[in-house]
Image (cartoon, rainbow, N blue to C red; front, side, top):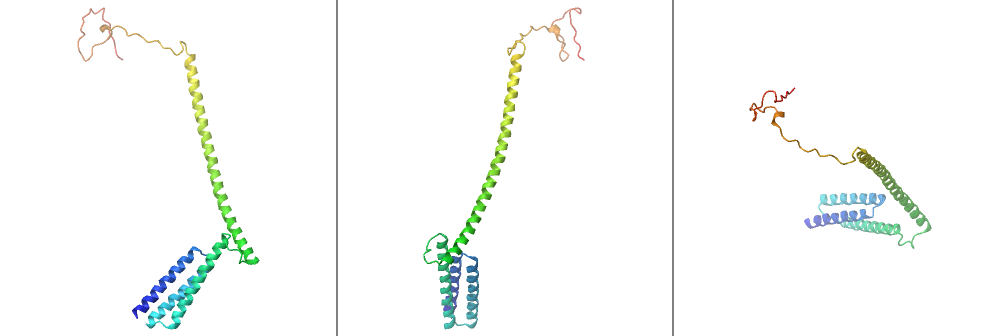
Length: 198
């Protein structure tokens, strides 16, 4: 009994794996059919586990379901090959026309997406060009300003050369007392120059 239930569960897992493989070649309609068949398989599993035994009819049902899933996977693989331009010799004119329409719709969507991305890239490049142009103008203005300053310096009297002033000899009479210390030299009142800080 447990071997039968275990076998049914294992078979159920294998069917799920076949459906997952089917998703690789997914076409919405086929997936819906596979999903319905899988639900039927789940119902049969539930019924068989409730009854406690698996009848010959249930075994045949599982075999039929597995055969249908294998057939659907084969059809999806053939459809995928046809989309790639392979195995076309077995197709009728009507099937080729249908395939052509599907491919043209797909190519149209691909081109639309490609154009959308290209336009976005062009827009980005145009903004980048404007930014670079503005930065270039700013740098040109700075260069021109520096050039004007340099020319103004050259036009100043004496050119760019500056006279270096020689330090004057120190005379303590020209400075006031610092921090209340008396001056080192005592001069007469007339000779002493007084400084007043205002």
